[in-house]
Length: 188
Image 1 (cartoon, rainbow, N blue to C red):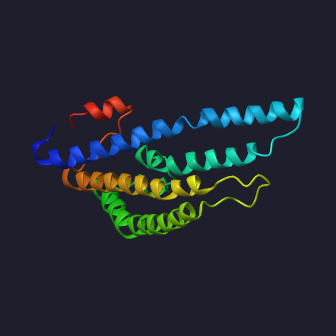
Image 2 (image 1 turned 180 degrees about the vertical axis):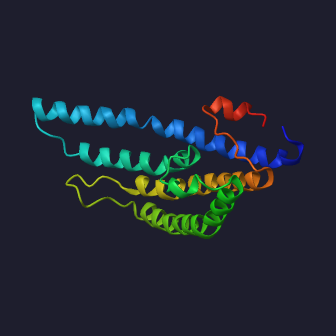
Image 3 (image 1 turned 30 degrees about the horizontal axis):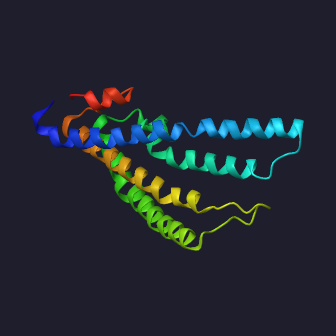
């Protein structure tokens, strides 16, 4: 490990591990989502459709989508206009990324965290239920996902910003590990 960048690399590795773990955990929401959808399809043909399957499916999908954002950022899978970006030097890329994180990403996600936290808090206090369904399921756990997702995304943004600093100092990007084990054992 580069002695000059030990603390920086350690912080990046810890944050990346959090995003990788959260992504792995959230991915398992697909199992109950599929189970609910299969049950609904079978119920429609055997008996009558359920009142609850649609609500549970959009709640689980919404949670997966929001909570997977940090993992998606970690893996570099968010949309980017690469036709110009790929032509730039590493230091120009890192400078542009760092500026975008500082002036666009961090303020936007911090605002989302603040507003989402208030939104979720009020929903939990009221034991809010959705009125868009006849069985009126509780909605506050889904709204509670908003600040958690924003917090994870903000944390991963810090890692990406630190990667920009590393690239500016060294002139090269850190390689994105392929697995969680690789993140935890990476020495450089």
